[in-house]
Amino acid sequence: MRLSLTLDPDETAPSRARTSIRALSLGLSPHVLRDVQLVVSELVTNAVQHGPRHGIRVELELYGRDEVRGEIIDQGAAGAPAIRRAERDRENLGLRVVDELTASWGACAGSTHVWFEIHRAP
Image (cartoon, rainbow, N blue to C red; front, side, top):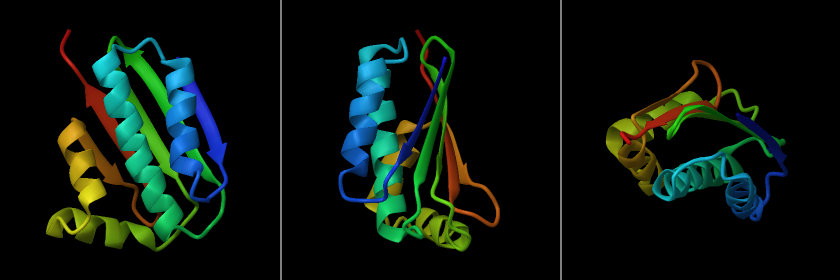
């Protein structure tokens, strides 16, 4: 199952992303659904605050029971070094949340295209 959203880069974008994910539920267990909503919300918030103010694309794919891969793309070109620096320095509370709730995550080279994976045992 896939979910694809494009959000306007404004202060309501994180809430709209959470609401859309909850509405579809993606067949996830409640605790994984909550984690996906929180990770997406944090990454969309970063895109709104630090991105180039273009549309923010959210892509989610359910691979199996409680296995999700997500991508947040804000069309920026210079954000990946800042994301990596914040990850390394733990400066950004939102990225610490992302780090804690995901199995893995990162930024594609040369962009602010951030991906994450969440895997939970049954």
